[in-house]
Amino acid sequence: MEMEKGMGMEMRAREDIEIGEDITPPIPPLSYALHHSFLHSHCYSCFSPLPLPLNSNYNNTKNHHHYYYCSPACSTTRVVSTEELRILQSHHHHPFSSDLRAALRFLQSHPDDRIAGLLTNCHKLLLQEDDEFAATIREGAKAIATATDMASASAALCLVLTNGVEVQDYDGRNLGIAVYPKNFSWINHSCSPNASYHFFLSPPPPCCPNSTKLRILPQHTVLTKDDEVCQDNGPKIVVRSIKRIKQGEQVTVTYTNLLQPKEISSASLDASSVSSDQNVYRDYAIRRLTDYIDDAILQYLSFGDPELCCEKLENLLTQGLLYEQLEGGEVKSQPTIKLHPLHFLCLNAYTTLASAYKVRASDLLGLYSEMDEHLLEALDLSRTSAAYSLLLAGATHHLFRFESSLIATVANFWISAGDSLLTLSRSPAWSEFAKWDLPIANPPLLKHICSKCSLMDNFKAILFHREAQNADFEDISSEFLDCVTIITQKVWSFLIPGCCYLRAFKDPIDFSWLGTSKYSSLRDVRPHLCCTAEGHLQERMHIFQLGVHCLLYGGYLASICYGRHSNLTSQVQNILDCEECLINDSHESD
Ligand SMILES: [Zn+2]
Ligand SMILES: [Zn+2]
Image (cartoon, rainbow, N blue to C red; front, side):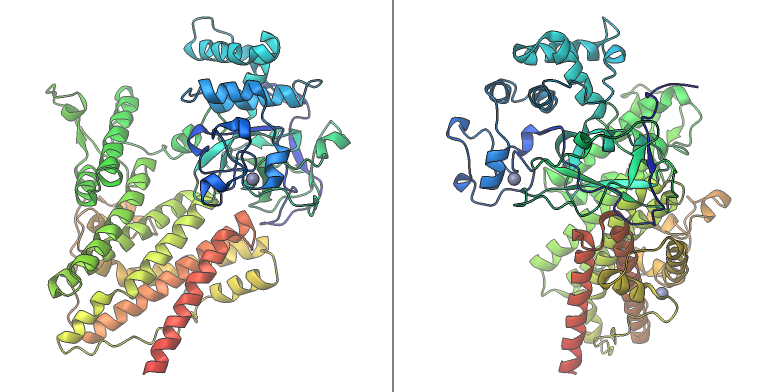
């Protein structure tokens, strides 16, 4: 048995916990540091976005605009030492800058208890003399050793590297790092966790309301009063259950700490990977494929060429990369590297494609809104964008069934798929059909309450009066899947004609066909557009229905991860409200 952690360094449920409940109150960090790239946009203390304009913010006169606070409360709770300011000035672009500042801050705020009951992994990290990483740590420790002795400095830096978590905002950006006390840091990692966490970024309230009590405790150790101390500054962390947890059961999360950032999710989605058996080449191939995808994304984000980006990504997805290309021109008779459609690199590509096609559609509508042929082309692009969104959500959902840690990601993807489908159902391009004497007025979209499932009722119930229940989770998920599988079958061939990669997919949600048939063989799909007015009306209705289902289910999952009053759930609510207004308007004008 491996004794990685000390006895009792795990957390167990104090009581039975239902799905989608807070397990901890917002826990303030022991130490934290904002990443360098956010120093000018986010509060140095609580990590919340700065109110604009920048120069009116509360900054210390000694600061010389190295960092800013969002409020007077934040500027008084987070005092920056001269050593820290020195690191800010002299290590601007040091990759370790945030870790160093967090370590320094930790040393200064914990002069008596220099490990706070946490693991430092110091021996492991500094073990090898010739190791490049160990050398970087030693060099970093030197930079903060002026405030203390070298041994404490190394220990503090190792502690930050071992326990530090990336603090993310709702958009998933890594704003900075923070080290949390035992009641978070002792929660173990699992690839199939029963809990998730998110951050609470706001200036400290006048008093500290401790709404939820700590519902977990270590097995062999007693937490002291100090462990639950109420401190006011820094980004707070909240742990929530994403499954039902019985009393005494161990609570686990999937976290990306600083030593293994992103590797966890990549590796775990990697299972079926490339279609080549040559494992020797695999790491190399993945690296080259990643570079290729990054390069395509750069075309879009930096050079503003979404069209070239789509072309490059779809080339890669449909044809793969030849080893010749991988080997840099050296001709070898090696097989083509093709990505499995559920590989995490593909998911990354789908995200980009959905966004790039959307931008292309709206560019086209903006430029040539008067010209019929462009309207139809814009409709084609929107369809492809919606199809990629749906595929992204469906593929991630497929993986989510085996990996509960993907819950927040999949919630996000269903919501964007829903949004994208609703946008498509409202596209001005539909009016084109009216010009061909086809009676395509506003369809009666009002009936978005599905007769086959209770998603809408559930969503409203959760928003207004009750928390999610574990028993509901399976029911709601299977109801949702039943409904979307049926509706998807009706619209999928309408969504995909514009894209040869998508045409290879029989179904973007139920992947059972993947193992059985050759997914790469193209299927017969209906020609461009269905040619009857009733056909279009039907298609629009189905797209609308599908969109509402995706939104509601995404909102439901978001309420489990983030609570019912989160940004994501209110985003869903807003889209639905807006939809309802549009419907009412169109009815009044009838
Ligand atoms: Zn603040
Ligand atoms: Zn339904």
